Image (cartoon, rainbow, N blue to C red; front, side, top):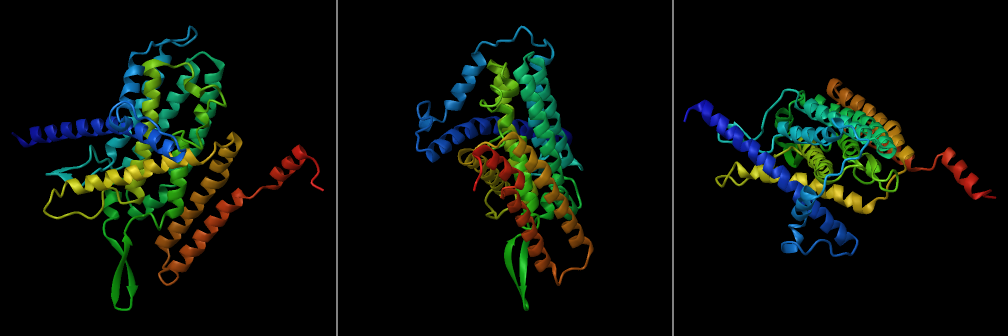
Length: 389
């Protein structure tokens, strides 16, 4: 077999494997979410279909596939079926630039390595805004239209914070390539004590970019419409949000896109802040498998965090949701970009630790200040409850 043909075969195998992993992961994450939330709420959860209810998600998918597809009389004939596709396709494409391992023989464990890979991921996330707007507009109903407008406002607002939260990583790695960012995080950070170097922590960007990491997580939760930022599809707000008029397979595509986005955000956070597939390996025993296992373990750690937050935090009010994005997250990212730039340019090795601690404390104080009641909130509380004297 020629080298070119073999490379094509390896690429097809990787594409099929990644697609199968994403589809199976969506089914497993849905089951995992229902079981974990049930455990946290002292319930049983799905336990009928398959062992421990593992096939419940598959049964629900089959039910949606054969469910009658109802289209409103006022719906746009072209845009109505197009919206779910616009939501789902970018969710699949986003994962194509993420390295999920080290190598398969001479081939990298990555579908494609773009030199602007992370910008491609952000662009695919931006395209999904069009799917939400189209879904709300094409349904021909007022409630989905209002839900689509609010959802697009939320996603655009948090896309700014999400994009800015990556700038510090780009500055440290000096590249936009996902594989290059993973390579820049290889190794272990050492603590210099006298003449000895003590290994302390992997050389990941989690610690030097901790505020950016927290901002990226919060923006990612809002981008994927997950609790407590799930206003776009909150049944207590606007019936069911932008996909109120969808049913059957089309609704299943929206559902699929949401969980694919959760996996994508988790994979990007793993790549940027936790070293991607970087981790200890057992030499001589399937060396290509260990990086893949480490990558999957880190991704599912973030997925569990998504589920944990859903079971713990109440839904935010929409004005507060927007205020967090514009008044807290964006200022924090701009401040930490400046801190990262000063650290890279200035010779601050003698004072680097102290400066990072001071900067971190300032960020924590800024976040805490947002949690304190403002003068306007106190006035509203007094106006609603009467005089406090």
